[in-house]
Image (cartoon, rainbow, N blue to C red; front, side):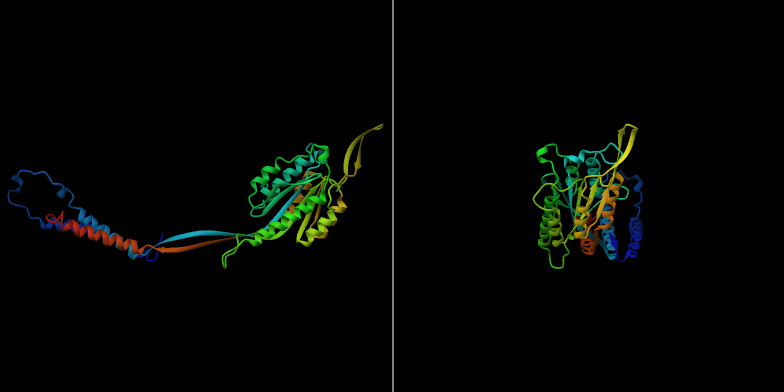
Length: 352
């Protein structure tokens, strides 16, 4: 609550003065009777005990009037948030080869990639701030592509689903269908954009969410060897629909392995199974970028780079309106004065 004329509240100091003056005036009007000390004492009636009520009602009425003069105002406020965010489709390779170790540690590609994905969505408390406000979905693929979590701005279900990701164990389902997965991701993004655009808004009202851009983040450790759609065709489709593709080669780069030889253990450099040429080309085709992630740190850096390249915009506006409280206080003052007059001329008439 605030007051338009706060200095008017200084009038409240008059209330105790008015009350004291009324008590003093009443005492001065009472003349002592000769021999009153010798009269027997009669018990006080309830009207005598409550003779202060009319004056109390008058003081309350004056207090309400003084508050009304100060013009109290209540503020009713609310906040609206409008987000120009990203629609992000994460495409996650869960082929059998993701169970292999990455870098020099004991963790598998799947364990490291899964945690990097979660940190990208939620934030890691360090470099990654989390994708608050963005619409994110998750597609996992091996030979076949499946929607694990639909595009949504609430990310808890996606994070919970990501924690359960693991490489396929059934050989009939194993493989790397990159093209099919990319085509499915692009179709999901296009459908989401159409649904957001079709939402009706009031005249002059800004929607609470607008898709700033659409991107696909593809993580894979292999080569396209399954499915019906070529990764290049899927990339052309994504480009046509205004979708950028960022690709991450999990375990990419030369791998150093230790082998036993007649001359003792020797470290040798071996290649990897990531089709880096294809990943670079489909990223370049759509205006995205390729990141080689040969170890956990490189994978974190890849997500950090994407996080910096693709930023959302969140606008928060605070609105308020003032409600005048003069009228209720004035009505309360009139009511109190009416009660005082009624009491002084009925129940307390002979006492007042």
